[in-house]
Length: 384
Image (cartoon, rainbow, N blue to C red; front, side):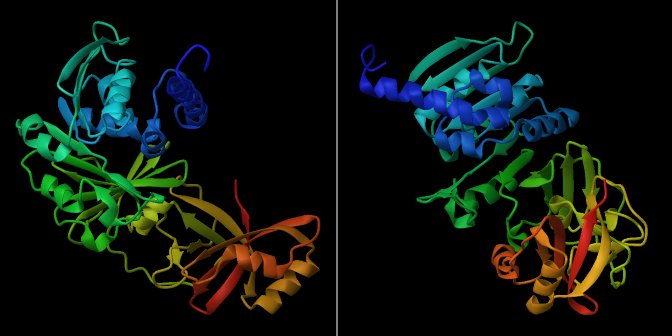
């Protein structure tokens, strides 16, 4: 390749091949035709999550979306595929050009405005597909122009990176947190995609905070204003409306105050989905489930439960959580493969596993948790 092209061009082409191979896990066959940057591929929404979000837009009769930090255009592609008019802004001109090429895979036509130059790309979406526009520029200076119509939905996925890579610190958002909260005060409907670890205490009043999980992984929290969804019955509590959405089950649950009493471990343990926990929607898991201790998200029931909101385990034994007793149990039961789960306990499972010295042909799962009787280790077996 270096004989036929410049060294920079050859390196860029090989970089795309490498990125496309890495992106296959997230984007499947579509990755073979997409254009990626390292950061753009990492931060891009999973297709299932982006498709759910676009469907929620159209269900609420949104017709036009301004994507203020479109990255490589993964979210905008799903919006465009559902017939929404999409206008994208992206600060980096190379990433903006890649986003335009990616949108051309689903749009009928894409207009790219980059450095004062206009380029029109004929899309593969066909005559009936939506059109899209990508503007290379600073979202903070473009929002008033692009979202002047108050019916236009504003979507933003701020970059969350520092010099070392991905960051969950709100101070590392680009555009800034102040800009994000300013968007939520606009007359437009707004959706903000953020990392799932966003501190609850800084979530603005009057919004819906929706934690999203995909196949058990909590991938984001969205702050929504002016775009409602259908939730399970319940009275929302607090300054903001707390919800969870679980994929692929496509289930919404609402968080609300739950004062059910705690209980000693019964016959079965429920480990709720992480999005359900963050939304404080434990009461939606099962009417008979009881928490093991205050502020502990493990629940116990007397009969096995099948629900997409939680994983069910049979409690085989309840052990003292002291290391000496646990090491003896591991040795006596010849446990060689040991999975350790924990919640509300200041223990490093990997370090504890090494100290317990597992050796033998058997495997086991230990759950370390606070209970009404103090710290305990539950020996559990997954049901189903």
